[in-house]
Length: 140
Image (cartoon, rainbow, N blue to C red):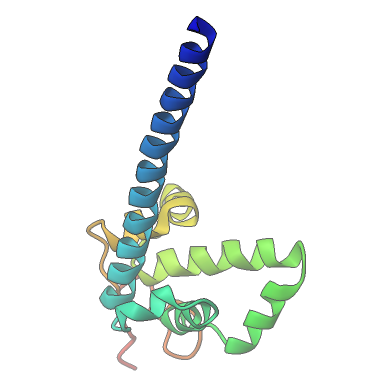
């Protein structure tokens, strides 16, 4: 009789543990989507674009000013790691972040650091409309 109660109690505690961590995980995922939504809106793009797979990468390339052809490089194993890192470094530059620590924060925590933080979008960091040193477009 006691072993059945211990098994029942263990199952209850395990289920409660799973439920609590499931809620925490759900809150974390929601915070990521809210941060991405805000980051896209800061860049002048629709926030809902952050929620649509593949399209969100296209819009992210537009925010950075990168050629859309480079999206194909994200499909190549191991090469995609390099291009994701350079994409996020360019994203940091597009939000006026120019230091190594800021690049690292953007690579690992972009939705929180850029979206929910005090970062402001200064313009694309690549392509013909690229900003210089976060000071805006050149006037010449």
